[in-house]
Image (cartoon, rainbow, N blue to C red; front, side, top):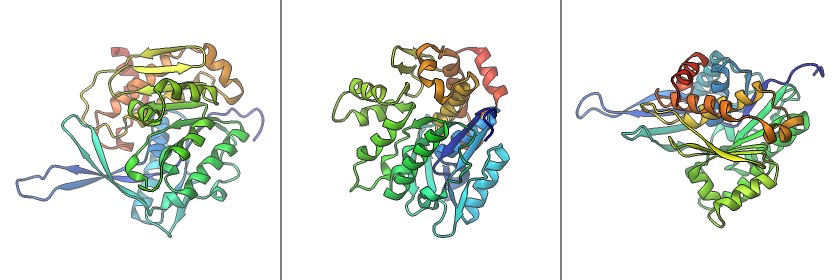
Amino acid sequence: MNAATPRRAIVCFGEALVDLLARPPPTAGAPRQFVEYAGGAPANVAVAVARLGGDARFVGMLGADMFGDMLAAQLRDAGVDIRHVRCTAAAKTALAFVSLDARGERSFSFYRPPAADLLFAEDDFAPGAFDDAAVFHVCSNSLTEAGIAAATLAGMRRARAAGAVLSVDLNLRTSLWSDAVDPLPRLWPMLDEADLVKLCRSELDFLARTDSADAVLRRLLQARAQCVLVTEGAAPIRWHTRTRQGVAPTFAVEAIDTTAAGDAFVGAWLLALVEQGLDAGSVATFFAGAALAEPLRLAAAAGALATTRHGAFAAMPTRTAVEQLLGDGP
């Protein structure tokens, strides 16, 4: 890459899968129906970035099947760069059956493993995948098996060597993990490498099960993390840097589906930081003095709007919609 070429791409790695959303029977006694939606946490973040006008890239493995074809088409249609996506016939695209309660809170039943995304290996990273990357973003769903966990950490090392900021949204789904595997020994090597960390409150509590929440935050900020965000649904966002901490408001909306709220939040957060000039060379000084209110407002608005529509890719808001909500205020 030419040294003068700006680093603008937000590169998201991991799973893309199909959410099959349960809908009530159309009539009494009729069978329940399931509606197909494109999803997968890191793929959702890539779509969120693209919908907001950012430069988004997704890297991962899709199955050579009808669901893999659908995901590739929807990523492309959203404006996501998928040149570095791999395909395999050795396993099918993962499925997640999703049910919603009366408040739009979701629960998942995953059909994974086996799944195509778990077959991505370190050698599947293309040489140019990180050339213009401002941020490399991952989550813990690509740590559930030893092979994909090794590929994830290798990707983080490659991205850092290429000059990218490393972002982690823990996005812990314990139902994806074997009962024989304790997630913590795999979670911490990923978290210890991250410059930016986003946790929900239940994930912070999970990490603190043998310690305290304050100890977890100290460990993160004493490793590489420059900023840690802790979300808890509609409650104010807690943010922590090495020198400051505070809270940021959220937006009140009528939520019908919370499936992709966190991913919309993360996509908007990362894009706002890149637009403010965040890069690997200045990440420490950036968070020592940067005003975080506006990036967090954009992120909170995007996350709120994503709950007002069904699905994941389908729920990601446009920049116009986010700016309209920002004009209305928290």
